[in-house]
Length: 213
Image 1 (tube, rainbow, N blue to C red):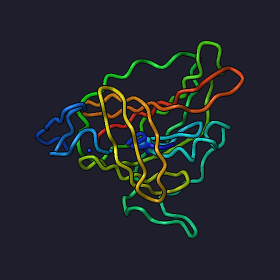
Image 2: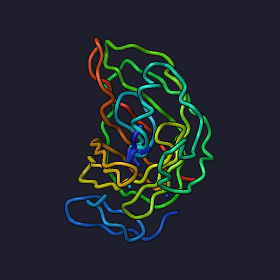
Image 3: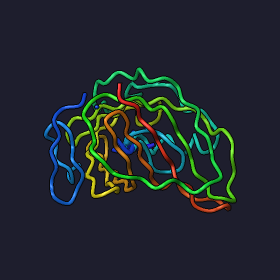
Image 4: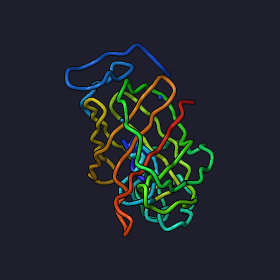
């Protein structure tokens, strides 16, 4: 998935400090600028080709019901984008035959987050059931999100630009992948949604929830 968090920025992609805001985007804690790239992930790791905000590339394995190889290291010959330790618990993804809920935007707060929920919304006529496992840790500092995950690549750095409830997450390492989606941020959580591809039942939306540690 990408905060893709791994958003995900990123994955789709944080301790609370004083917040500031910038025109045309949400406030970002600790003096970071909104509208510039955090799931998360990137922020994150999820089904389809997209994640986390955190790790879109591991999504194919999750969508197929396979468990991605555990990791957090760069892998053989891979670029290490950060030295963040992956201490997040393993999460089992779930396909839900519903449309995704609306995201609300909000202030993205600096700190370290664990992926705590991975849901793939498949639409009212879509499939249901478990869809693989993932573990992802992200660290948000201003408009930058560092990601470490059990997917491929194992580490990633991305920037997060938010406007209203939508975001654009752009990888700066190890490539320049761009993911767009929606998010909700509170003082204790960071939730990102992004396209997860399509099958015979229609389009899928990946949702990654990160809890602030």
